[in-house]
Image (tube, rainbow, N blue to C red; front, side):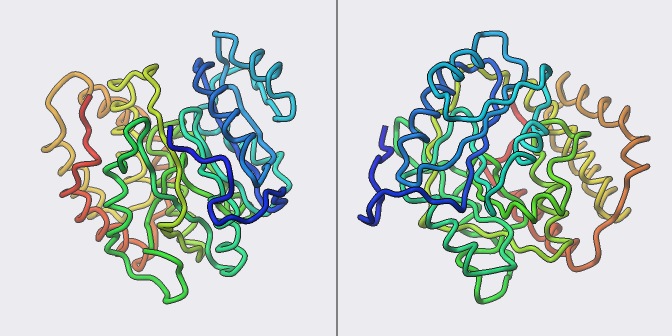
Length: 311
């Protein structure tokens, strides 16, 4: 692993009281224990809150025994991304860093993220560069973040974004709560897009910051087909929750034409159709300026090799 254990700028290690790390996990005991060990060794010494989404492999017991300083939440059922909402409700710091059980923040990154958020009161979230372990190469999605087509104010410390990656982002706690956190209807899979849009609608800016780094050692315990189904379903739900009618129709048609013609895609569309009553009941189209950002990002993502509904 290329994760470091001393502050990258040579500053002495001391607790940073501005930021808490939130982790959600389910049935990934080895990955979680590794991540908690690396987070506990950070020079910022951040408070850590873990939501265990009803693991059955002893994850919660092992975490409680080996890392008693971390606050462990066990809701007794799989809340998906909403497990982060449960954790943020316990956060008392102005900033919250999200982290998956197979990712961890590089030493010094959390302090730098908090510094940026301190300097810019309308900055709602900063997303880090993602490095894949053990190879040490950048995740393909980084190029998409670095080359974001969105314009933003000159004070932004990096390219403006229209969404973020929860496993590699530090958010302003108050902004997260103001926007309502992760929507329970989406559960998990691409859930960031809706929250990011609701943040932008409230005047918050999101950006990519090159000097921040997160490491990702992808867990082997994952069902890529199930993730594709919920990811596509949630894309459709987001489209009809927030986009005006014409763009929503065009986006739906584009997806119907371009996703793989197989059972997982059919299942995703059927699930999306089944949820249409609640989606339309909560529908709240974004204003024109936000739709323009979403449309520009959609155009760019059609050329992306990092986002494909395959698996």
